[in-house]
Amino acid sequence: MSPQEQLQQWITQSNNIVFFGGAGVSTESGIPDFRSVDGIYNQKYSEPPETILSHTYFIRRTEEFYRFYRDKMLCLDAQPNAAHLKLAELERAGTLKAVVTQNIDGLHQKAGSQVVYELHGSVHRNYCTQCRTFYGVDFIAQSQGVPRCPSCGGLVKPDVVLYEEGLDQDTVEGAVRAIAQAEVLIVGGTSLVVYPAAGMIRYYLGNKLVLINRDPTPYDGEADLVIHESLGRVLGGIEV
Image (cartoon, rainbow, N blue to C red; front, side):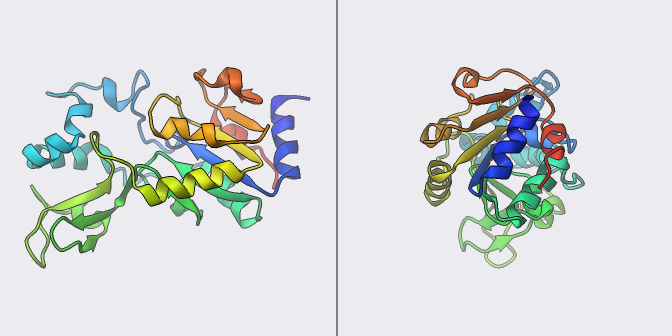
C-alpha cells in the first residue's frame, strides 16, 4: 500500500481527524514562508524580521514596524489552495474536527473551515490597545503611519503573537484538547521547530500520526506515516 493509499484509508475509516499546520500550508497560495531559502527570513532588510516582528520593536519603533507589516505580512490577494479546500470539505463531511494553525493569514476560514485554532493570531483582527475596539484588516491596510483608533486615539495593534509575547491561553487549551482527542493527527507544512507550538503534537495519544512536509522534520522518526511531497497535492488527492 502506498503512503497516499494508507492516508486515504485512515481518513475514510476515521470520524475524528485533526490537522496541525504551519507556513507550508500557505506557500502554495503564494504566501512566503519564514525559513526556507526564499522565505521571508532570508530576504534583506535593515534589521532581521525576527527583530522587527518583536514586541519590543513594535513598542519602540511602531511606524517602522507597520511599514514592514503592511509590506510583508498582509497578503490579502492570496486565495485558499487545494489543502485548505480539502480540509474544509472534510470538516463539512463531519470527519475533521479541528484545524490548528500557526498561520495568521485567515485562509482556512476563507476556504470554509469553521473550527480553527489560530495559535499565532490573525491579521484580520486588530484592536485598540486603550478601548479594545476591534478593527478589520482593511483598517490597517488603508491606514498611513501608525494606525490610531478613531474613537479614542489609542494605538491599534494587530491581534497576532509577536516575538516575546505569549500565546493566547484559551486558544492553546482548545488546540491541545482537540489534538489529545484525535484519532488521526495530520501534521503538514511545518518544520516543527517553532516552540511552544511545535510541542503541541506531544499531546497526541493515538497511533496514526501523519507528517506531510516537503523536507524532513525532527519528528519524522516518531510518525506513523511520513510523506515528503506537496501538501496540496497529497490532500487534494484525498476522496471524501
